[in-house]
Amino acid sequence: MPPQQHFQTPQYGQPPAPQQPGQQPNRYGQTGDGIVVNTQFFPLAWVLFFVKPKIAVDGQETQAPAWGRTHLPARPGQHHVHVHVPYFLPPKMGPADATVDVRPGQVAELEYKAPMWAFSAGSLGVGPQKYNGVGITIAIVAIPFVIVFLLILFFVVLAVI
Image 1 (cartoon, rainbow, N blue to C red):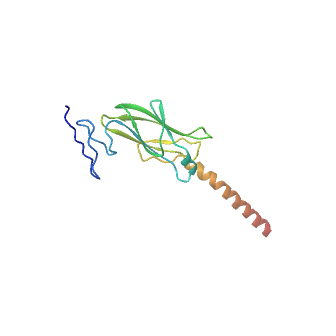
Image 2 (cartoon, one colour):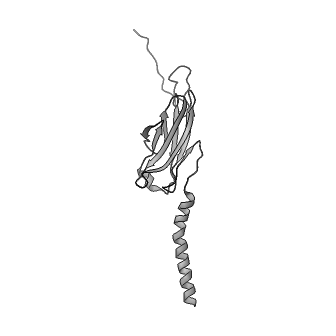
Image 3 (cartoon, rainbow, N blue to C red):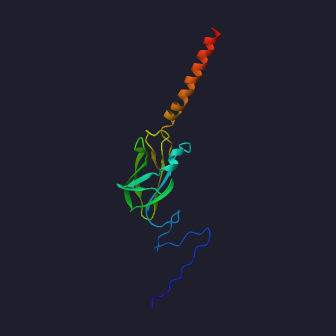
């Protein structure tokens, strides 16, 4: 008869027990190697609430379950990571690529930020990252206000004459 194994449930605030001897859980409570990609978008781009980013590691594409932290298992070594958001125009919004080095027993962290302008590239790398496309977005929003202001000014000057 094999010996019985006794498992203790970890108490609140304590990390789970390691799965293999000598292997400690990382700060996410996971043991082993891998890549964590934290995907984010600017909150005013509310349309992105309805789509989920796609992440590819060495050409193997997976859809992230939601925006936020996604853990992808990966062996130690260098890996190519690609992230984009499926969209209608353009079909791949905010493509971004990075090369990451996964060390044995550790998790490599990356941060992806979708661009504010759909035709700009996304930002992917060690955090913190910035939102791309901010300048063009501000220009596109500001141009109608400038045109309206100039029209009002034109009609005020025309009325005075």
